[in-house]
Length: 199
Image 1 (cartoon, helix red, strand yellow):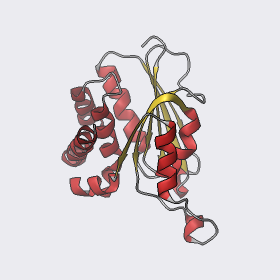
Image 2: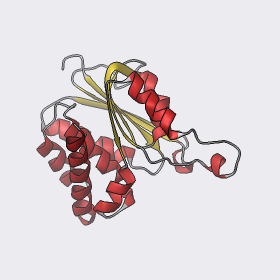
Image 3: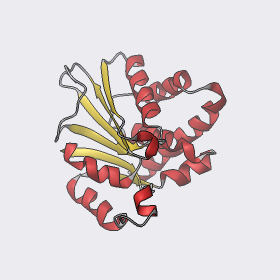
Image 4: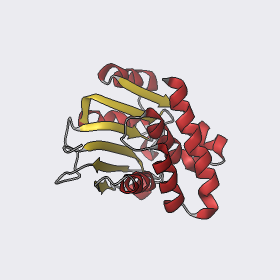
């Protein structure tokens, strides 16, 4: 851990990437691990890319350079492909396969890539890729807006981070508003179980 363990989380504006990262940071602190984070917000309010870098361990910078990410968590499939060059060859990817279609595609000015080749590319490059219909699981929990916490549960279930499940749950209790806690705990559990059943 002296060299750091790097998580790259990507999505688009409005998907809750920042909350996702805050929970991981809080969980790391609960486990006594140093943590550093950075954020990139693109044109977040217009559906632009949002990414966070979370590094656990003693590091000088939270920035994740190409070829450094140990884990890629993507709330949107095209964003996973864009971030692929930032991953180590041994990295794990966890992603929601539900596209967020940009306005330029809706307006007919661009096309959205076909999913099967995109997902196959990820599987070809990385040894462990977990694909979830995150929106379906979030709706099952009670709201499509819980997608970020479904993926958080999936990350915990994958066992790739040196953090206990209880640390994630306690971090959720500390970070999420009480009115939304039960929904988020359900979403976390659904993501956690989905990855366990895929292993």
